[in-house]
Structures are given as C-alpha cells and as structure tokens.
Length: 136
Image (cartoon, rainbow, N blue to C red; front, side, top):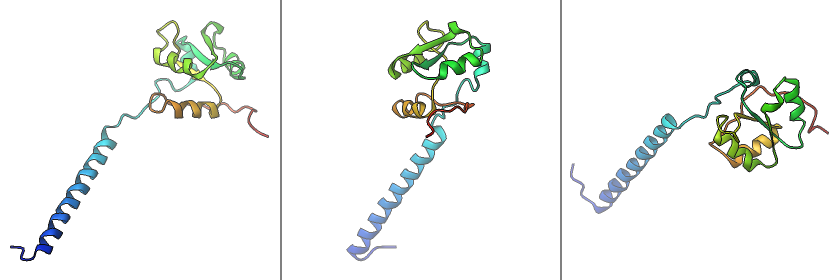
C-alpha cells in the first residue's frame, strides 16, 4: 500500500528501526547465552588432589593448613602464600610448573573476594568444610 501522509511514513520508518534493534538485541543475547563458556572446576574434591599428588595452596595465617593436615595431604605438596596476587599467578601456572598449584584452599569470604577480583578466570568447588571462625 502506498503511504499518503508524511507522518505515516515517519511512523513506519521508526517502527522498522525499533523492530530491527529489538531483533538484533535478541539475537545477540541468545548467541551470548549459547556460546558463553561456563567455568567448570577440573577437580571437584580434595581426595582427587591428594591421590594425584597435586600441589595445594593456602593463605598464610589461616587454619586451613590444619584442615589440609587432617586430610592427610603430603606436607611437601602444601604451598603457603602471603598475598592473593601470587595465588592468581600460581593457579594460572598450574601444578606442572614448579611455582604453580592445582588448587587453593581458603575461607569462603576470602575466596569470594578473590573470585570477584579475578572474575571469569577461576571458580569455587566443594565440598565446604564447616569450622568455627567467623561467628560471633
């Protein structure tokens, strides 16, 4: 049909652009959801780390070293870290590198801060060991 008034032409042109923008936005969103990489932990429990004799890190000054000892982790496979930046470097290097680690154990609040700072690179895996600590 032929559009007679200029106002109707403007409305049709605006409507076409709105539909085009909505369609492209939906397509981009759907593509992102389908192709975005979901981080999955390569190791899901400490016993696998212990069996494979992987190096495990912990933050200096926490009770986590006692937990690792209770889990019968070889003391030679436990590595202590002073700051979280060296933890990120060690996790990136991996267990095959002499300065790397396969996993890092710490208290959940500190792990959450670490994950927020390094979002997208690492993930937290279970199990969670209950222990007295942050309660009042």
